[in-house]
Image (cartoon, rainbow, N blue to C red; front, side, top):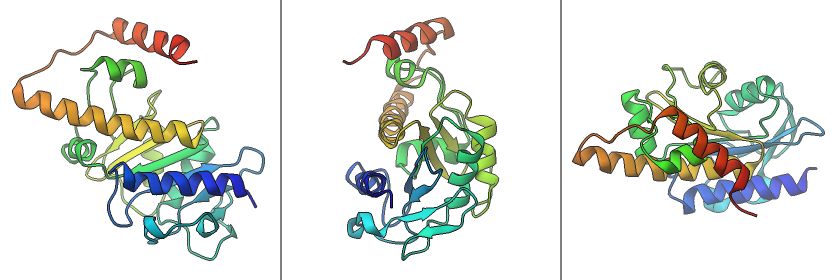
Length: 213
């Protein structure tokens, strides 16, 4: 079932490695099928390089395994909590990308220092309180603190991004790491100016309404 979604989720799980957002078996991508509500997610502890679409786990929103030969990711409760409480979200991605996770380790949000942040995110990247891994606590923090951003830094942990599609959540993960790297480099030189809120809103509105085809 859900063969096309399995193909997409597998593709973007493997892309986490090629874009340098994860190492070994850490991190995961999931996608929700709007019609059935079923979620396709990376299996736990399986190497990204070895993944095939048929290896993906399919679960319902309560975590019951619908299809798959492997156990789903240990982060499945987090993904499912987000899906149950954010109806517009159809993909959740978790990474430990180095530069963004460095801000998460410090418990620091990333202010809007760059026009690319204004365009893509429409505001600062928020940071959560510390949350334990393994249950719904991380999902609760995401829902409570992510606001209108497609990305959040999980304190002492890593990164979660969300989106209406797997592609949009993945783009947010890639863009966040690129921005975090640039901000880190800028902070080695001095203290950059924060872009005013009204200019952030203008730039984000223009980007969402006019950029691309």
